[in-house]
Picture: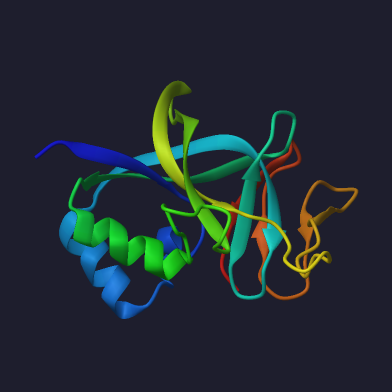
Length: 156
């Protein structure tokens, strides 16, 4: 069966997803290593939401090869509150993006769960501020990264 690529950057990448999701990924996913893209990262409580944007900080995550099994993708969509039939309806949408594999920065196309933005006109998830020394400041989940505009989700 051909596989699809998924760029995971939050709870899907750090093992904090619910047990059923973790088990499904453990059975089906083949980790391909680290990858990155430019994205604004928002704190949404216990998990992040990313929105790709040229010129944004570098967001690192994990590239996973997944089977094209509709049951697995429905489980992931349900967990991420993504609705392929109405992408604007959920908190996230599954979108094709170009990420760069590490090492070597080779570009590959992958699916990513992209945050749909605030609901009701006001954001409940401000963009993370950068401290002068290049680390992200956040009350709650910790996002760390070297001074060159790189962010990685460390849970929290």
